[in-house]
Figure 1 (spheres, helix red, strand yellow):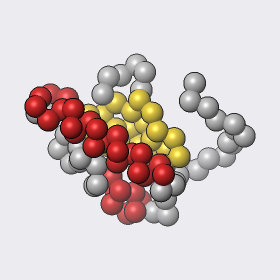
Figure 2 (spheres, helix red, strand yellow):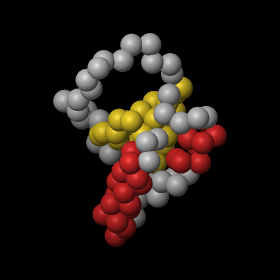
Figure 3 (cartoon, one colour):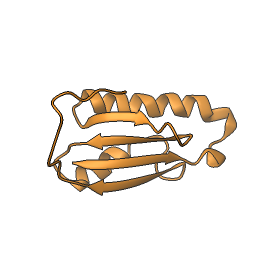
Figure 4 (cartoon, helix red, strand yellow):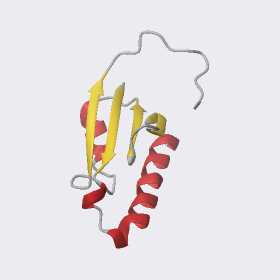
Length: 96
């Protein structure tokens, strides 16, 4: 599994394209969630224009291909990726 922290470089985003880019970004992570690649997606509450994704894919190469499909990639956002093994997982995870 992978933990991805995405931070949009808002000062790099052209103001006239900001709404369209954000809508396309949201459509990208929704499609990856629906495809089963992203298991948890959400914004960080304490940092603007940033969020996390927990992804489960077969390899880092597959994840890199998925990330490359984001409209903010490669110049308008940073993607910090860490691979991890989940040792304990709650039966019920909610978006609280």
